[in-house]
Length: 171
Image 1 (cartoon, helix red, strand yellow):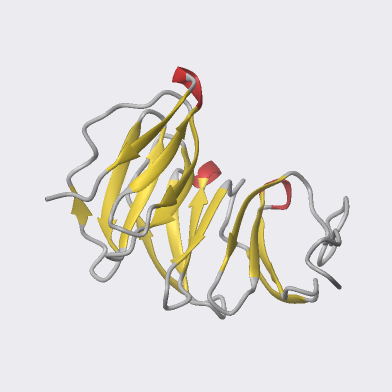
Image 2 (image 1 turned 120 degrees about the horizontal axis):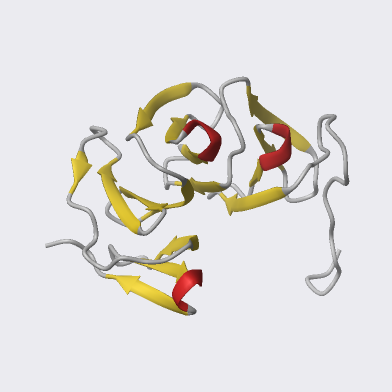
């Protein structure tokens, strides 16, 4: 397959490799594609070629966002359960972060901090200890997605204010 060819994974349904309202996607350092399969209350991982390699299910409710750090840990905005959870790359549960109103998107910055879009605020956590860090000062309205900038900050799609916001690395 050339880089200009279109590749598709899955289709509608609840079986392995199928989706109901996928909403979050991340790619890890090994090229695995991680998908928050919101309507099926799970996360699925695929090879670049589309082969299913992992399903994380059972504890999730309407997950919307997903991020993977450099070590392969997977962070899921478990929206329906009002939390963010961390899993190992093979699907083992590590920990939960915070008590949120509606976490929708997650990102991991270059310094290993977890950033969570939660209904108007951006919460931050140390991924090594799970400790909460000071929230970002700028409030956003209806955040939809976020991505680390590679330098310790994060970009947030601030849908309610029709803008993109950059949060720099905390001091």
